[in-house]
Image 1 (tube, one colour):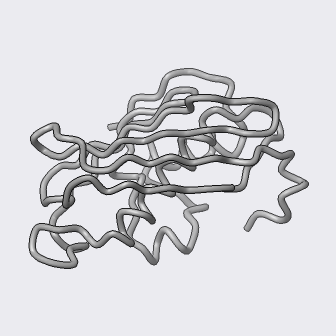
Image 2: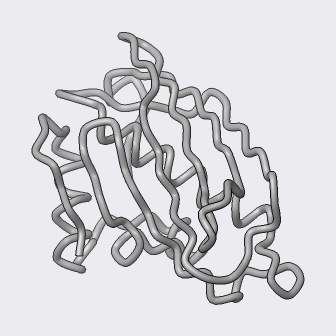
Length: 160
């Protein structure tokens, strides 16, 4: 079940939230399907400028027993900070990623991994988002830093 705080969300983000809630997300990008990223199961909270995911790490993304593959951590991190940025957009805004940094402090173990992201700073043209991954024991596993270039959706090209 997802908890959604009311906000002035863009039509794209509202459709995303509605699809995630209903389990019928028609616009799920092919890349997310191919990577096995499942916001329809893992997104637990959304509010303007904040999201919380819980990834039930069952070991299927491990590079070694009990250690998630760093590329997977990067891909899921990119998704989470992007959804967080989407939650802070209004009107006809979109964005593209300018920079994404993923800092791994500890191996990502099996079990429920909580990922919280928030927009730390937002100007007219740039958003800065941070996320933290915490393990079942509450210890910090990963820190994510992302800079997003905010533009009108028409300036970003066609969305498919």
